[in-house]
Length: 172
Image (tube, rainbow, N blue to C red):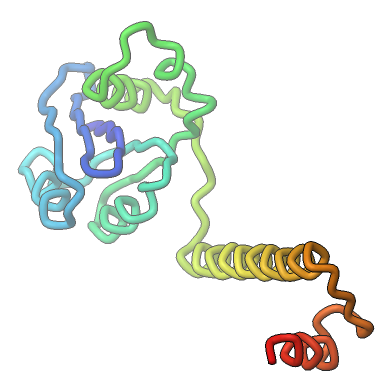
């Protein structure tokens, strides 16, 4: 079986095709763990399937959930390179899921690299740290602009202990 999953924030559109491309099942699944797993507990999908989903903001959770089941071969499709979907004249979720399943069946899915859980966790920490550094920089720049707008000059280097002490004195 070949399963195409068109992922969205609140739901997944799934299409299942056989080796000949015949549509066996399609369903709109709410994005809950129980609902997703119950779809894949169907008899035709129990023995393991080839599953394809486009890389999007919701793929992490669905991939993690489905990769726990034994026998599933999951492929993450590169949406930029999957031009059959992007350039289609008629674009619906049902059609996208079917096209993904059929591209998988034909071996035409451009795959994305899926790192290990450990690497995914490390990447997430690096992204979070980078966002904190950007936020800190924004706040420091805002402090500098407020000081400039009010004509306040601080003699010490920016955000040293002395600089912060001088700022505290301004508040008194």
